[in-house]
Image 1 (cartoon, rainbow, N blue to C red):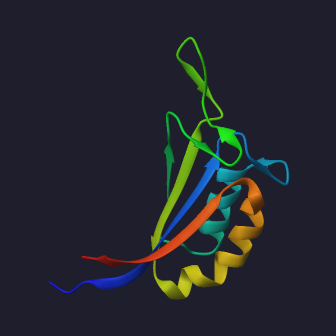
Image 2: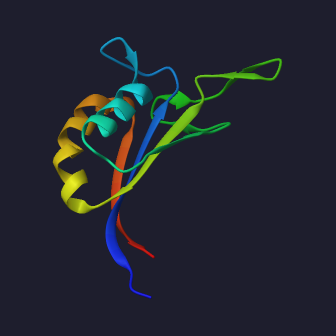
Length: 104
């Protein structure tokens, strides 16, 4: 079995983050679709904290402003050109990480 070298992108934000009047996770997904990215997944966390404080507020079982992770696995040639735009959209509201992965 031969592994393909690809990039794994993880974007950590909060549910209430916005970009130009739109929820940030939706704006990022729209960018990925327009750019021909093969797929992306938004993961919702139940609790977390970072430089902007705690990401969990809970009232009677409903969680607000939960942490989100948007994950993309893609070819380097398709993902690298988007990194500056992604970082500009996320700005200081989150964390963008990229690392190489082997995909089987």
